[in-house]
Image (cartoon, rainbow, N blue to C red; front, side):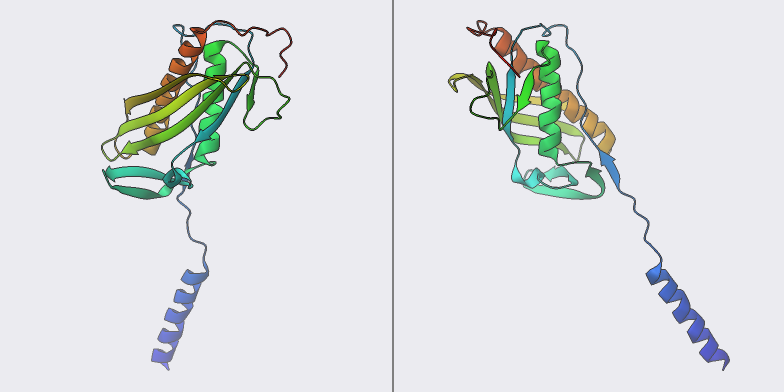
Length: 204
């Protein structure tokens, strides 16, 4: 009888353990705007079209990705992006460009064919990740087009930052800084171009 009660108690404990909710240790991260860079900030009365922005398919997931070897990636079991990384990347890039160019008039791709934009920014991202050693890599091909779709400039750029190894929060901050550098380079390229021929009729 005593043995039967012991077995019953053990079974009850096992069942209770299976039914009790598991602790969720997930942590969620976002990118952040870099803020104004006095070297690039300049108000221009333009309408900026942002997109399309393309990230590698392996980043199309909620888990934070770390490159642990040239041909191997690891997905974090606890660290997550709070939203899709391409959406976060696009929004923060638009905020950085808005600050760097001194304009609040920007729209996201796709837009209506009748919508006027003075410049369109397109970005194909090759890498946007942290390494196991904390080194951050943002490598991308970007283009600036005029409002008619004519290509004005195309360039490949690469930016490196550092963060504490294994610290997803520090990596998100470093990735944000790298994205801010990309914005600064794009903004400087736009500022070097002649003003659009007609901004008086522009509308957001």
